[in-house]
Image (cartoon, rainbow, N blue to C red; front, side, top):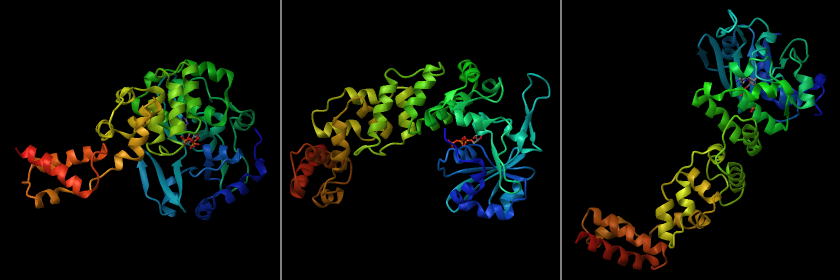
Length: 373
Ligand code: ATP
C-alpha cells in the first residue's frame, strides 16, 4: 500500500476537512485527537465524510464549546455534531481495565491516548493524530506497517472473545481494502463465536457490510471463515441484486444493505412465491406485486421474475381517470359498490380491455351496479 507521508498528515487533514477549523480554535494541545478509521483513511488517501475525535479528560466541554448537544452516555460524555454538513463524533478517551483475569472489564476514563487506542479492534484502526500540539502519528500498536502491508491484526489474543462482532468488521475491511488477515488473527477469528453476541449487534455489523460496494466478497469471506451460513445460492443472488440496484429501472429501488443481507443470508421470504409466479395478465401481476416490501421485489427479480420489470416501469403507475365522485354523480350509492366498480375498471384498464374516461366509467358502473345488486 502506498501510504501518504506521515509528515503531511496534518496538512492533509486540514485540506480534506476544513470543517475541523472550528475544533482547532477551541481544542487544547495534546488533548484532542483524530482517531480510528479517519486516521487510517487519511494514510490511505481515501475520502470519508465522518470523523471521530477523542478527548482526554472532558469531551463535554469541547462539544459544548462547538455548540453540540452532549449525550451523557453511561458515565462518559459523547457528542455527535454536524460541522459544515460533516458528521463529527466526539468521545471521551476510555480504557478497559480487568480487575482480575477472566473478569468482565470495567471501563474507566483513559489518561492517555495510547490507553484509548488499546481497546480498539485492529491495529490499522488504532492510530491517532493530535489536532494541536506536536505533529506526529501516534501508533503504539504498529498499525502503520500493517496498513502498508495490507494486514488486519487484532491487538491481543482475546479480542474476538471480548467482542465477536470484530470478526464481522474484519470481513468489511478485508472486502473493502482487499486486505488479508494476519496469520494469528486468522486462527483466532476462525474460532470466534457469533452466538455470544445479540442479534441486534450482529445485524448492525452485517448491514454495514452489506452496504459496501464489495459486500459480496465480504459475505464470501465470512462463509469461508466458517462464521456464517449463506443462503443457498446466496453469493450469486447477492451479486445479481447488486447489479440490479446499480442499473435502471431498479437502481436505488430498495435499500442496498437490507437487500444484500437478505440475498446473502436469507431468510427467504415472499420472493420465492413471486419468482415462481407467471402472471398471465398485468392485473394479476399488480395483484401479486403491489403492497410488497421493495426488498422482496428486488430479490424476486434477481431470482428471475422478469415480469417485475414491466410491473415497475409501467403497471404499478397505472391509475384511472375517474374516481369515486364520478360514480356517486352517476347514481351509485355510497358504500362498497364504489370501490368494487373502481377496482374492476382498473383491472380492465391494466389488461388493455378499455381506454379513456368514458369506457372506464362504463366498466366501473357496470361492476358497481352488479355489486350493489
Ligand atoms: P468506516 O470506515 O466504515 O466508517 P470505521 O473504521 O470508522 O468504519 P467505526 O465503526 O465507525 O469504524 O468505528 C470507529 C472506530 O472505533 C474504529 O476505527 C475502531 O478503532 C473503533 N471500533 C469500532 N468498533 C469497535 C469494536 N467492536 N471493537 C473495538 N474497536 C472498535
